[in-house]
Image (cartoon, rainbow over all chains, first blue to last red; front, side, top):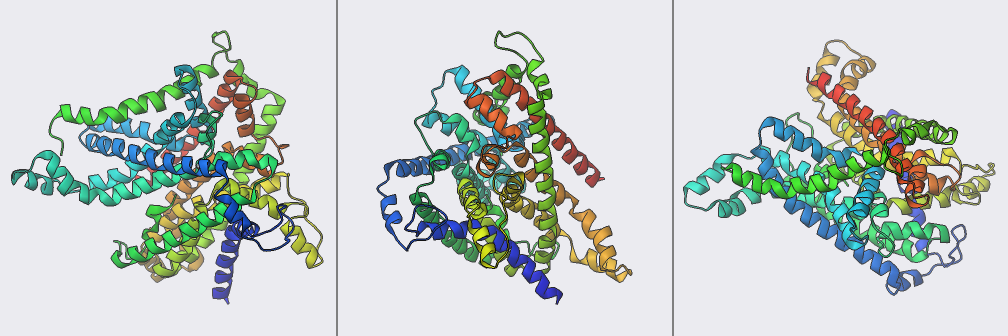
Length: 272
Length: 272
């Protein structure tokens, strides 16, 4: 009996989580634009989606900003982590403290503080200001993914490579970096997802001309959301579902039991 | 890995200069704007403005709603995580995957979908009327905002809680049972205390975003319910009173710092 109750509990919560998503998916096929009524099945929104220039522009911006900001953040973070490792304890504490600020701070405070900065520095609002803001809040996530990995690395492989005649740069790229890759990849992925879904910080740093998906949706809320948006979301949902399933089943092959004898799934590394 | 201080400092420079310009300076600017008025004179008026009745009301409402939502998230998530830790890792992994997937969907759209569900002639009421139950009118009321908060932030409570609970060594539980404790006693004296880091982590990741949100209250509160986040957002994007907005943000930061202190206190006692 209690087994049934437990299953029921989990199922109810999953239904709760997916109710709005189901609504969005159904609505994307709804012939009627109004949300309460179903007038017929149609694929027209999926077709008109790709010719809607403003949505496509927002999608392009969202993807490119996410990609660029996570790449640049990863590059800066990688260098930073290598340096932090060699810092004295006090300096390291201060630097890690600064690193934690964007994560602990409320998005709205980060957003307005950057807006004030751009205004007083005379930096024009637009694609660039959004990019800078995204890099700024991405860096902490990447650093926090790379640091533990770097700390647990054995220096002797690097030293051995140097002893065998490799230059520091060669040794780094061929010995250290491959070992760091899981941390680098999960950090970059986390940064990418944080960037794609961000609304509040982008809202304050974007200025009038540029939109990302999130801000585009926000401006449309007043007017009534275009059905093309629901079509786009359904497509994104499908793509992510496939991606996560693939990732999960490839990670399954290389999973090891951790120390306590439990088997916490490694999926956490890709949670946004 | 890095042998000389020179190279260490070289590597650290990109990040440190970025952090100073784009993290530290903006925060200093918020504080500066908060403590000055439009003539540049030092003043406490911005901070003191929180005492205005309408601001007090929205701060109180924000605190109330975010506290309720955080507690609800905890109450819902804890049993769920306990059930999940009992399952084998594979099955638990699937459920966790199911949880993470919605997080990848755009937050605004998912909240929008709740509008569709909770509307007067929305999906929920259509269903209730269908089974001859009266309609529920929650939309544009605080209850709708709470539902939105719990929906958006539940995964952020589940993930750290699940991590903490799954790390508890089964042997410790078994030892307690062997020594004569029943299930309830084991939970109260073994499981619960060991899960506190996860609880604190989850609370931090839910409470602050819930306290400072303005999107949820706009979309589900019909623009009539103003939370502290809405007021700050309006001061910056509509009223252009950056001093007042910054002053209110400083008040918010006080709450964030209180939260950090509480978290640090629990961390320290955990080590002892």
